[in-house]
Length: 147
Ligand code: FES
Image (tube, rainbow, N blue to C red):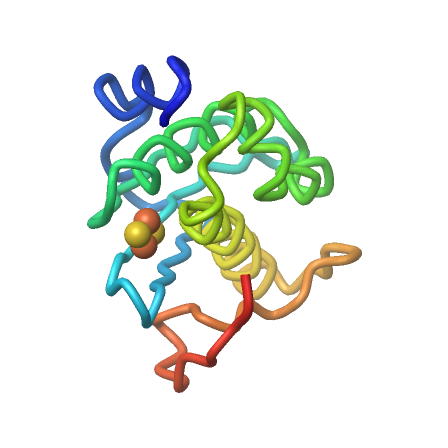
C-alpha cells in the first residue's frame, strides 16, 4: 500500500525537532482526523531556507510527508519553497494512497503557514503566498475542505 520511500521517511523521519528563534513557524491541523503538524524555518538574509524542522502529531503518512517536505524546502528561497506543493511532496515519495492525500496537504499548508509567519514578522510579501486557512495560531474556525 505504501511506497518504500514513504515507509523509509515514516520509520526514519528527517529533520524532526524544533528551531529556537525560528524565522517562521507554522502550525496547522486537520479537523477531520485531528492530526497536527508544525514546521519551523530558519531563513537567512537572502531569503534562503537554511534549515527546516518539524513536529507532527499525526498518522504515518503525515510524518512521511512532513519529513520529505522539510528535505525539499531546505536550500530553496522562500519563493521557490512555494513550489513544494503537496503534489511535489507526493511525487517525491512515489505516491500516496488516495485516502492519504489530505495528509500531504497538511505539509503544504504547514510550510505556507511558516512562510506567512516569516513574511509577517519581516513585513515582506511573498508573491503567490496566501494567508493559510488552518494556521492554529490564528484561532480561526477550521473550514471543511474537499481533498
Ligand atoms: Fe490525518 Fe494523515 S490521517 S494527516
